Image (cartoon, rainbow over all chains, first blue to last red; front, side, top):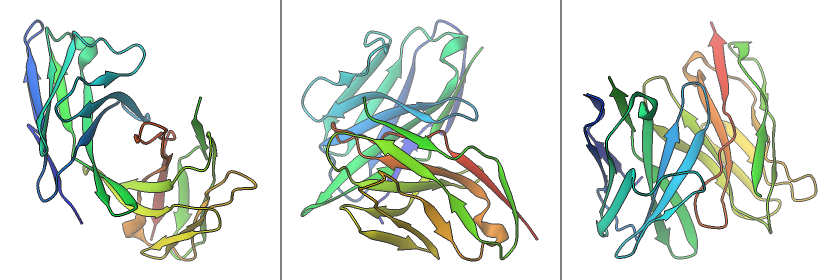
Length: 117
Length: 111
């Protein structure tokens, strides 16, 4: 199946710094990518929908100025956590939508674990 | 809004036991339905899917049937293995193309 990579897989940063997470579709083009957040032992919550060449659509309660999303190409979306605080510590997961004919499948990245000290 | 209710875990079974993980959803229209699996320390992997009513998705011995009447997509496997130990997520597609995840059901299979 298709592969989605995320980088870094794990990051530790100091409070107040910014962290950029990359999500790449390796063998297909994705006009749409999604960013999710997963808290320990809980489900994935959609943060935002990233569309290539346009502004991201954020879910209610997600601060767009804090979680900057850029989808500059058909294979890359980035999530930047600006001025990170300990409460931003979480597992961030991206997915990329692959449209083949009438079939649609989402492929998930392996996730990025962020720890803010 | 759209939502999904998934059987609470953890579920602990002996090897070769029968598995059922219940999943019901509320949604506008008839979305595609998915089961994803997350093995320890790994990312989400698509397990199976069904795109229309009465479709049966299957993979690795797991099956789930799209039941429009009961808005359900229960996951079943006739004989589980230790290697099936993981967290299973039921996920209907949302109207924006995203997936709406249940809370996940942790399965532990003992030898």
